[in-house]
Length: 84
Picture 1 (tube, rainbow, N blue to C red):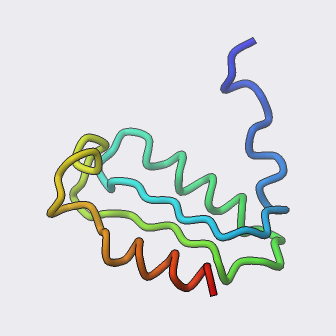
Picture 2: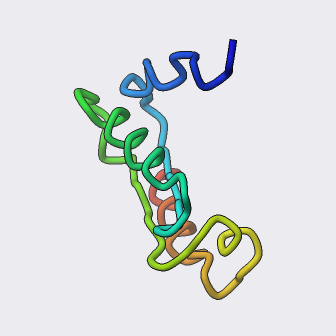
């Protein structure tokens, strides 16, 4: 059975831990991150430590090694807040 046919997002709305999803706006699978985030925060009482970060005009490979595109400062801010 294909991995994608598994109910991998079924219980994401039970996650209490901090979650940061980063995706390029122009990446072909950006819809999946948007949907996953929406499922995760729906009916989840722990949404203050969840964030979907869409990077404008970026594709997947931009977030691999383009240091001027990767939002290191925002990532650091998110994780510092999550570690409080």
